[in-house]
Structure formats: C-alpha cells, structure tokens
Length: 567
Image (tube, rainbow, N blue to C red; front, side):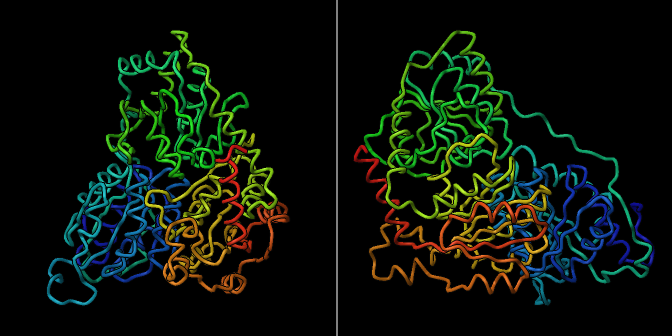
C-alpha cells in the first residue's frame, strides 16, 4: 500500500487509511483484532481480515467482544484491538473499558463514525461518540474522513504507545469514514503485512536508592509482615516478595490473586487463611507492614492492614492503590526492582525482622478449625478440586462476587504455579465468561473458568465463544447472588427480589443451545476427575455444581465463629 489515495476510488482510499492505522498499532505489539459486524466499520474490518500478521476474531455482540478483547490483553500482555460500527455499538464497550482502565489492561478501541457533515443533523446511526470514553481512556484520538494514510499511521503509533505507557489502559480512536465504504475493485486491496516500524517504550522506572536504603534500615529488629495483593500472573514482583520475606524472615499474607499461594518455595511463610483469622478486631498487628500489588479481595484483610501502625507501600505509578489512605511511606518505581533492592539492602546490613510467629499460629488455628467442621462448604471442595486438577501454569479465570471469595477462603498452598485471573478493576459480574474465552484464545492454552449462575446469566451468549475453545466452564449454581447472604441486606423482606434475584436458568439447556458438553454435579467429589478429563479435550465443556446456598453459608459461619472463639 502507498500513502496516496487511488484517484477515483474513495473506497480504496478508506481501506488504505484503515491499513495505515492498523499498521501503526502493530508497531507497538498489537496482533489480535476483535471485530463486530457493521457497515461503517467496513474499511477497518476488511483491513484487519486481509492482514497476514493479525489474528482476527469475529464476535457479533459488542459487549461480549469487548470483554473477549480484555481477556486477550490479559492473556498476551499486548494491546488488543476492538472494531465496531457507528451509533450505539461502541457504547457497549464501556463496561470492559472501565475494567481495563482500573486494572491497567491495554485495549485499543477503534470506533467507526459518520463524517462531520452527518453529525448533529438527524442523520441515521449518527451520534456524538468521540467522547464516549473520555473519563476512562488514557488518550483520545480522532481521524477525520479526509485524513491521509500518513496521518492514520502516526495516530496508530501514538495510540498504541499511549495504551502501554506511562500507564497501561484503554485508548479510544474514533475514525470517520465517508461512503462508499467498499473499494471498486476489492480484490486489489491486500493482502498486507505490518511494516518494520516499531515504537520502543522506556524501561520501567527505577526506585530511589537512598529512599530504599533508608526504608530497609527501619525494618530490622522489629516485627513485620508483607501483604501481597493482586499481581498479574507472571509479575516478577511475586518472586521479589518471596526474596524479601526470606531475607527478613517474615510472613506473607497472600491474596489468592497474588500468585504466591501456588509455586512458592516451601521455606517461605506464605499465609492463606487471612480472611478467616483477620476478621477478629483483636488480631495481632506487626510493627510494620509492606504492601505490594492491588488491594486484597478480603475487606477484613484490608481493615486489618489499616490498623497496622506503619505501612510501606510499593507502587509502580503515582496512581497507587491505598483505598483506606493509610500508607506512611510510598516507594515509587518498578515494584519488582524495589523489592530486590530492599532484599539486597537488608542482606548487606544483616538485618532481620524481630522474631514473631503470631500470624503463623493464627493461620494454623484457622486451618485446623476448617478441618474440624462437620460439613465443609461445597465450594471448598470445588477450589480443592481445581487446585488438584489444574496442570502447572493453567490459566484459571475466577468470577467476581462469591466465587473469588471462595478462592480466597479455600485456596491453600500447592507446589506448582497456578495462574489466576479475575476482572477486579471494578469487580463487575458482567462479561466474565467472555473474558475467560479471550484469555484462553490469548494464551493458546486449555483453561478453566469458574463463574456463578448469575454471572453466567449476565454473559450467556459468551457460551458461543466457548464451544470451539479448550475452556472448562464450571458454573456454581447456588440460586442467585449468594454473596448478599453475607451482607446486611439479607435480613430485609425484599432480599430475594432485589438482591438474590435467582436467574431460574436451566444450565443444561443453555449448554445444549451453544453446543457444549455438559455434566451436573450435586457435590464436589467427582469434580477433579471431570476437570482433568475436560482439560484433555479440544472443545468447551460446561460443568454445573449445584450448591445448597444455606448449607454453604452455615458452614462458612461455623468456621469463622470457631476461629474467633480460638478453636
């Protein structure tokens, strides 16, 4: 392709402009394009389809497409491109864009638009869409209907870079196209491959050496702990946490999404039952606490952390996560580098935390109390089955609400790594299954998605994305929003109609509708074998675990009460 529009063929010129834009995006690593059908986006869709360097995914529902792209971004670590037509189409991207914004995932939102002369005059399928994502995008770009290919390529470079640096997240490019949208001779347009241009991003920021040394000097000889919150799977900060904890000989309170409950060395003091034993307002607090990663799943762990008298927060950007605003010292810079520098500093100085195993004793007591329960919650068996069945580094997507809290409660240490993913940026239950399908497509590995029945209801058409992919979907059917059973709303007479909202969904019929193999389980006993068998296949499988909501809640309450009673 050249940068010159073909005389007399505006459709071909629009195609060239779309090619140039996608070529610019490819310079920053974009390789997956998710397209939803539409007319005004024809040049972008055609350019993506005829590129020999892109993987093209067609998802008709724009909301599902956006979450699928979010899963691709999670699975690859690279920008995923979304394409949709004009009008209301791009508005369906908003939930996924908000999640990408808050959880720093790179999405490139390419919305086709009517040209300027068709806006604000009552033209069909035309609305003000250039500012749809203004509150959530890292950057906004607009390409007019007469933009040159050079202009489009430059916007692609800038948009791709903006979604990766200085803070990863969504970027919106609104692209106007005039009719005709199809080249006169479409056969002459493509195929094409991305060029050799590249945009090189700077290395991650280096923490201040003096500040790190001064912080290290304050840790020795006093009781301490590390709180590891949510980290992206494979984040080197996880190894850095282990290294610093071993150097200081202190315990790690590990969120299930930290990655530290699976694959950590045996000598590391990784504690997994914090949500149970830190519910007690009298739970012991260290003299200092180092925090790494995003806030933990458990609000009880967060509340405990706020009671610690001295907090050191490690953050990679000025938008650090400290929702209770308790950090006394903030070390900005690449957290993995900061952790390594802290470990080196304490080792050189021969520093150790003061001997303190109160948290270890609390962990052991909580585990013992769980083992003594007459009836374990069914979800404990489910989490145990997944931990036993999943091969090393299997991508596991965990839905929000009660499911992610089940993993917090019942995922204990295992020798092999386990890559847990979740949409915890804004913790919505929409699009969870679409994200899981994109995650499997991005990693190229068989994976597992664990979702509740209400989350399935919210994203039912995403089952169409699962049938041809090696994804084991485990649906926890507990009759609606069981998470609300743990909240004050449960005592209200309107509880079932306003909060529980049972979806009355026949999961087996839904599986059949979308061509997925199906099996029902009334207990977790046979789940491990079923998951192992399903992971060996090449197609999607839906496993339904039917849970007695009240019995499960009673089991949790019995456990928490036993822990707080001291046994």
